[in-house]
Image (cartoon, rainbow, N blue to C red; front, side, top):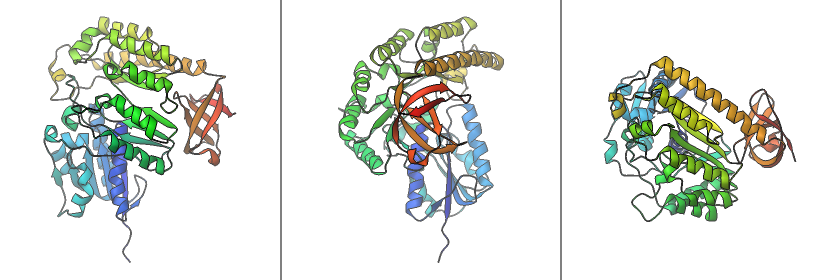
Length: 428
């Protein structure tokens, strides 16, 4: 009797990567492999990399080296693998490196391997296929991929080169995947992609059409939308979320800068007036909505005065949380050649100021909802005797651990903030 082979995996970066890792690993499991935690001895370990910043590339390299100490064979996939295919192929114990075109074929490629250091690179812009993916292991929420690639030309971003052009399947295909997720027992779907609002480009379907179909045809209690560009977040989408019993009042919207001059240099497709209008529309229609915003600090040309414009703009809009990114120069982008580089210590100072503002707003958002009742989906983890979960508007709550609550949606009353930054709650 042959010994069961073991596989482990590690994902860096975005929710889309998590969905893709799960689908790729599942092919190995379907062919007799056993999944073990990352860091344990394994026959093969898959590392799904990220290249959105220089720090992401650094983490990818570090994780590959760590995997090589425990796995006989390491397979490297993802955005950083697309950009650094030949480099990673030279690493110790790396058997296979696959870019955007080939990562969903790694099981077959691995079975056919003839030796170490096989590299599969491609021209990302020539890729026109859409590979379906959704996560199905170890979570109460499933990430559902609905779109890939990006046709935007933001001056700082390397992702279009790593992922290729925007592409998406037909709505009926997404609905089938969503129904498979429901059959697995999940209670929440998170819609993800590189630029989800661009769904249906070049077809007679739109992202709004997709949301309407999911709302009508998929029997799941909760659907959450991940990051969406502000100019693609139309009133009809906001109104659908407001009226739906399934779509959750949680928005993640990239601003990147509160200065119109910097937005122009970034080649973003909106200005601060449009962005403010989107936020105010959300709060008017859905007062309890959670709004997370992406901001980049230290972009080339961001003077003290222009940063103060960003800070002042953010002070004037009702956001709930900031995702703050110090500008990371990516070779091959137009921004990397721009004058007006910002010193690292200045970036750090600006980041700290925004972190303080974000912390104040996040805390106040939690305080504003104490005493109210919300439905919470509880996660599987037992964290120091507590079970955690999220309200529909993304407030993290905790109760004393009770295994019967795992993957259950229960109504709770929000009581008080905890030292750990959660909200203590009680069942209603």
